[in-house]
Length: 227
Length: 299
Image (cartoon, rainbow over all chains, first blue to last red; front, side, top):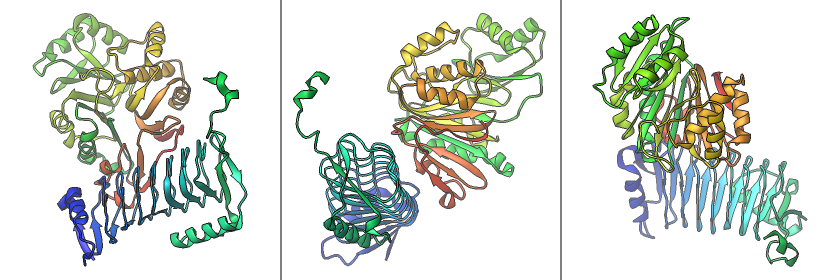
């Protein structure tokens, strides 16, 4: 484990070192000390390394990640794992708003709660939240899975495209064009696989599924008056 | 943009360290607000029948002695002044309305920045570190403080347009966000006798709460009404004589984080402003929910 003191060497020092690693690097395990809520910790990584952040992270931690595993042993600020392409980002505590925003791939695990707009405009990322998510989560979500073991706030899945949403607890209300859908065997398989990868214990059968009613996909001439 | 910070001391033993704990919070928010900074400090409650005013002039060499003696003579009252850079803390046994009226007539360039029994407000254009030095914030003692670093988006960078804005006796407000219906609200409030010094949107929110408090609402009731009447984006941190409050608009897109230990409660736009506080790593940390009023002490 390579220890990196963020207070001494700064975020640029960390990211430039991690981003410069070659595919065959032996420096595969990193521990980031004294994060002190700094922004953009361990962003833009491209190699299959593991980076553990020992404390609370600020904004955009693990953003644009490819192949790496980023573990936050604390809470994460807004936009954790934003636009992730692949790899894993795990937050042991809670995450602030817009967790996993626009993510294309990979797995984001938030063991605690995520606040508003979790999975906003997600494009293929899988997100598993051990606790609850705030309002407007999965807004305009296009692809991927959002699994919420707790409750979901107001307007879940507003203007959703083809992402799949699974919620175990209460949904305060559904956003425009988001409806409850039948949970088929293939969905139970997906859920079981995601929960196992996230190492979160929950019965796939206890979740309800939500997705797009696909009513916003095409212009409806009956609504012409509304414009 | 803009950064807001608040620190409420729960353990009286730490009151002497308020400034030392709070100043780095303010300075950490420099990148969110390099235009101006301001802080409200709650300390040294005045005796019954006395009033504490924070006054501000345009320059450091303003002659406060003239104000002191002039006011004493005119109102036959007791006045004590203490100069802090271009600000002055005035303690008097005069009636607030009389003192304000005399100042308006005899020292029209002096701004009344705050009024009450414990509040003192210091604000100035410039980087937060410079503002902190100018008003010796690091050595300040007190029970709680709230502060603001401003990146101006909708009105001029001036001292008068800097936060905190006073909203009645011992109450003040800092704001991260922008209001969209402030012009209409300002006109309506002017009709009710509320005065405004700037074109600033936050001053309108302050005026709105002042009006509600004057009408007899509790702070909580005033904030509840604000959730309905104030249109726009906001995270507010509000200081009162012996407490503070935090509230966010229904969309809650202006960042905010709260942290609490047995010794203190802290609020900030970003966690990094709180990270250095003793025990922050073990504190209970959470994001305030939308449309929810959080209060500590008597807020």
